[in-house]
Amino acid sequence: MIKKIDKNQLRLKRHLRIRKKVEGTGERPRLNVFRSNAEVYVQVIDDTKGVTLCATNSRQKGIAKLIKGKNKTETAKIVGAEAAKAALAKGVTEVVFDRGGYVYKGRVKAIADGAREAGLKF
Image 1 (tube, helix red, strand yellow):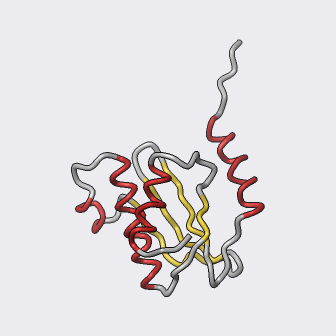
Image 2: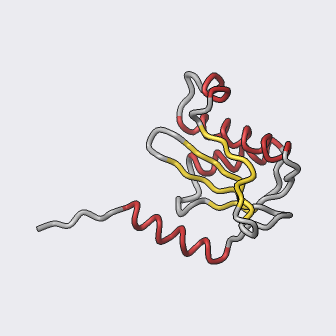
């Protein structure tokens, strides 16, 4: 019998390996990325307090209007820019990027690029 590889389980292992090294502080919180097949979610997290400072996703009403008619990569770039604006409004200017175990290309890279263009420093 052929066993199917659980790709999400492999991603979670990679994510745990990354999390051993990447930690968000109050001065430099962690920008965490999660992507599903259809949506993209971004959080800015202070790990020392265990608090999410701000969160943005592609399902929010204000963002849904901006992404209408765009492909997934363009949507991710817009979500990254909106997450950066929300973080800057909270007084966060510099973050640590946590790719969540995903390969740094496509939508994950677009989130980082959008956040950089909006003014966040990595």
